[in-house]
Length: 149
Ligand code: SF4
Image 1 (cartoon, rainbow, N blue to C red):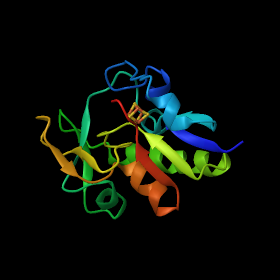
Image 2: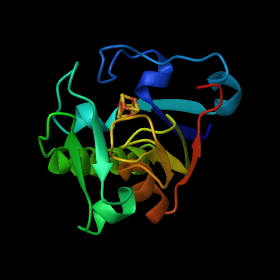
Image 3: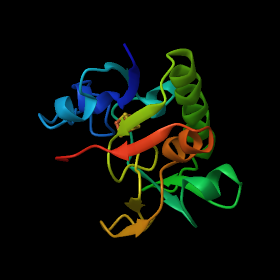
């Protein structure tokens, strides 16, 4: 059976910054008959739950990986290193599990695919990928944003 990496919060794990999960019934269809491998990059990167919300400032996840953007919390703490470490661990988990696809939580600075928050903490979105989504894509893993969220 094929495996697919899934944002842990979508599978009901209460690992979001606010200590909640984001389980949605639409996820089951996106996973299909594959084995879901739940993973939370931010927790894996060493961040606590709950935690301050964080956004990418100065670009998207690709820019963070390239060293030209960073991740900060709403109180100004730089958490770039934790987010990059979490992305690396997500990639390692995906590769270990033989995943060629991932379905991830939309708009997250880690898991977002196609659009993310723009770093102003006012709900504005911008085109781009989260750091984990960007790193997975760079290694040939197809990332899609989960439906219904
Ligand atoms: Fe969910 Fe991803 Fe945020 Fe973890 S890092 S809480 S899996 S969106």
